[in-house]
Length: 110
Image 1 (cartoon, rainbow, N blue to C red):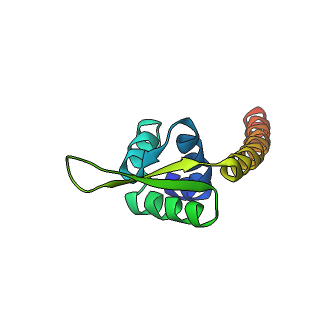
Image 2: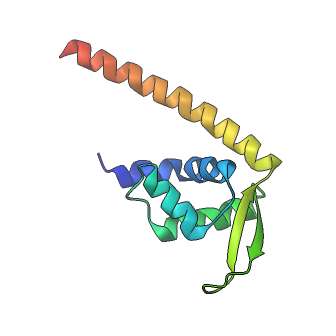
């Protein structure tokens, strides 16, 4: 099974979960996802997801000046984003429970 395909399917949920804990700029979100165990997540995928979630109204953004380089665009979650996160979390939990049940049945057969 290709983990990158799994990540693509849950990237919105993962990004929202990271941003819900603490606002972050693009590379910071990438770093936190990788630290959490999603090592295969691509920079471009995360940046695209942040922009898409922002356009969909799930995130806010603001610019913070940086003395070490260009200004950084931070993203934060808003009420709509929290609703999306909650809905996707419920969907993920139901899906994961279904898969766990199927795999347990397969293990009992073998």
